[in-house]
Amino acid sequence: MSLRHPAGDETAGATVFYDGACPLCRAEIGIYRKAAGADALRFVDLSDPAAAPPEGVSRAEALARFHVRASDGRLVSGAAAFAELWAQLPRWRGLAWVARRPGLRRLLEWTYRGFLHLRPCIVWLCVRTFGARI
Image 1 (cartoon, rainbow, N blue to C red):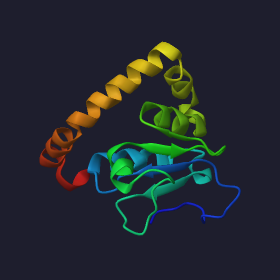
Image 2: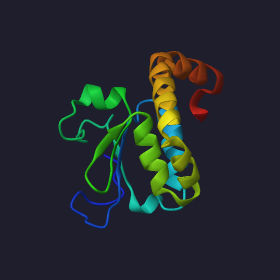
Image 3: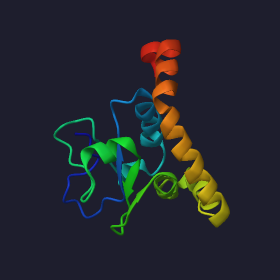
């Protein structure tokens, strides 16, 4: 399991749940882990059988869709989860502000759902093109 803080650490910020078995997801999380402010986040790789999915969400559901538990306890998924993650990272906050605009929020969620259908093909293409580099 990949955690930045122990489970009981009250100073931890949001908890990011991701599919570490997906090379594309792993690469994107790698970018966020290097960002300023990431040390306050917890990253949970749900491809690790020892990692617990968010309460109330099955492992299959958690692996199929990006989830973030905000520091206030709210669980968000999809485009809203990306906006929550970006809001926690100082250099990404502008993007979070844009992503949270009502009309754009719906468009981003619709786009994210479309991406989920294409994700297996995109991962296959990336692995085939870039190999282990992603």
